[in-house]
Length: 343
Ligand SMILES: Cc1cc2nc3c(=O)[nH]c(=O)nc-3n(C[C@H](O)[C@H](O)[C@H](O)COP(=O)(O)OP(=O)(O)OC[C@H]3O[C@@H](n4cnc5c(N)ncnc54)[C@H](O)[C@@H]3O)c2cc1C
View 1: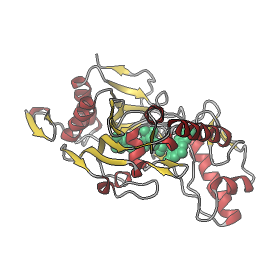
View 2: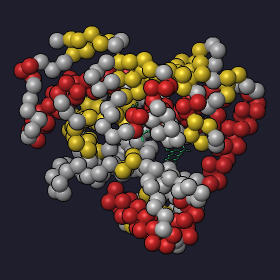
View 3: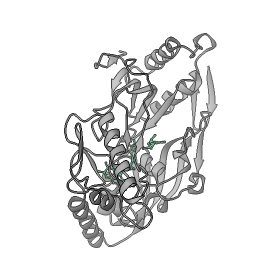
View 4: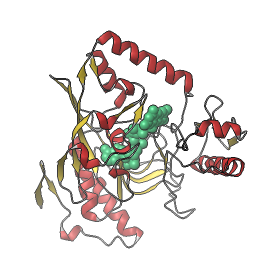
């Protein structure tokens, strides 16, 4: 069965394929069917630590690494049809995946086609990494994304988070996007649709369920030498102020009128450790996976920092990173660490 929607036709699970998801067995069967429909891209029980920037994360019940937009759309629509829980990530640079892994379908967006049009326009799949796109724009003498030459992650993640640095923000150069809606339709949207605020779009709201498929950015002509000098200065500043290694970026939002890093340092926690996770000596708002760190270690250190800063300064530090809560009872995760290929 196919349904015409948006820019592509797509299949649905037939009535016979409909399963009861009330039981774990029903979910497992639905995920096997989705994996079977995407044999080149899917794996069952696939560890996520190797994909996460911070190097932490248990297995996804079913992981699809989508190298084409069509694969991403198909995987999500199959999950929507089957009523299976699903989510899409980009570079996994800003998400702490629990040690017990993630239930349902996880799609990693690796669709990376990018077009640089006349008139300083960039049209890109949301899975394209920000850094090479921003560097290529600088190389062409196009201004507007220079602030992003050191921003880890994908364009899709940057749009959803309204990422920014050095006074720049992705929402200021975005002019259009294609979004896959919860009902499976693809909708071209304008920037207003996202309701952007500081480091926020409406796709960040819990349970919204839309996927950015592609984005268009309007940049502006500039002086290539000046842009290159600016990019070099931003890169140098990042290297000087941020620690290298496996992190999730800034852990906490800066509270009004202050800096999270300053408060953590003042609380005497620079260098503090929980298991394999340490507060960076370089910048106290960065927590580093010093080796063998777990999500439980990370959370324990976040709790310890929040408690100490709260008790000593009366300030509530709010996480800037996304920490996914445990989704399985302890002991319920699969004991196998080897992904089960479906082909
Ligand atoms: C060393 C370091 C430095 C950083 N510096 C900065 C900085 O200067 N400024 C800044 O703003 N951030 C910074 N970050 C945070 C992070 O890089 C950004 O938020 C980035 O834009 C996230 O992109 P991602 O592709 O990794 O998203 P992910 O971490 O994969 O996902 C983040 C969220 O976006 C959602 N998402 C991802 N792609 C899509 C999509 N296509 N459709 C719908 N939802 C999607 C995910 O479901 C998740 O909720 C830094 C992180 C690190 C590790």
